Length: 217
Image (cartoon, rainbow, N blue to C red):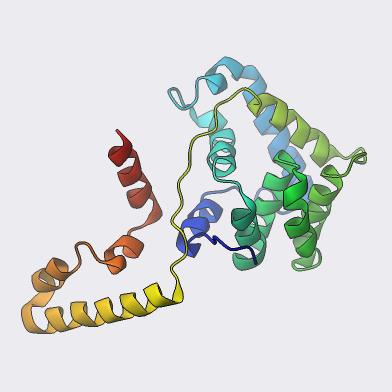
């Protein structure tokens, strides 16, 4: 596993908000992707205006862009190995959108891990080859890449996974919170949290990410 791992709860958010179910079976994926591509081709000027302008028919492409904005080796490794078949499906699709050689090893290691979804992993591996086979999913992936080519990818921050020392520190902080709650109730417990690692990692991903944007502005 590559160093510099991302916080698992953050990666899980990207899995949960992805259309993994629509991409899980070949026939369903082809139909879903065909509809999505058709919508994007009809609304291409609007897609180019992302993120300033967003419309519901292009939601799939916005989801792709947000994941592509954070796509690196630790991210795709986590998707393919730590977040069940759902993460493997989304990771394989991102690898089709970004057929980069440095991601291929992680995708190849996922072969056979989720038999019912292995077809998409195989597509991702084939898509990264110098001469990919003619395949409907890969053709649709190529059309998606073309549609997204000139659309700015958002800078998508992720928290790094806590170290063992930080996990131990959070356990100590949790004990202090419990002690404060036992002696003074919820208000006393909340007063202990500010500035702690526990507070940092307990925030859900959207809340934390929105705070990063506010900090930049």
